[in-house]
Length: 177
Image: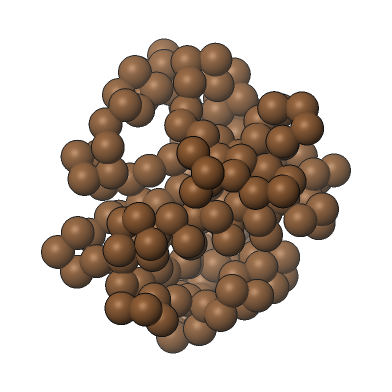
C-alpha cells in the first residue's frame, strides 16, 4: 500500500474494529451539516455497512478509508470517494478529522493528497468534486491548496442552526487526462 502511505498518515480499508469510531463520527451532530446526515445511525446499521465494506469502488460506487497516524496506528478520521461515476470518470471527495486536536497538523492535507493521487493515477479519474459550506473556512482552505476551483454556489442549500447557508461546489480536473 505504498500509494496510500505518507510521512504522517496512511489510509487503509475499514475493519470491523472501526465500528465504535465510525459510530462516534456518524452520530456527532456537530458535523452533520458537513456530512449531510440528518438522523443518528445505530451500531447495527454500521456493523452491516462494515460487513459490506469489502466491495470495490466499482461495485459500491464509493470508497471509504480510515485515516491512521503512522507513529501510533490511531484512527483519526475518514476520507471518502463517493458518487463514483466510472462512465464519466469522476467522483466526489470528502474528509473528516474527528478530534479538533488532530486538525491543523497536516494530517488532513496529507490524506487528501494521497487520495487525490490514488483517484487520478490508480482509478484514472478525470475529475473530483467537493461540496463545501461557504462558512467552512478550514475545508475551503484545504481544498484550495490542491487547486480545487469553485464552479458554483448552491443558495440556501444547508439548513443548520435554524438558518439557511450556501454550499459551494468545487472541482479539480486531472491535469494528466
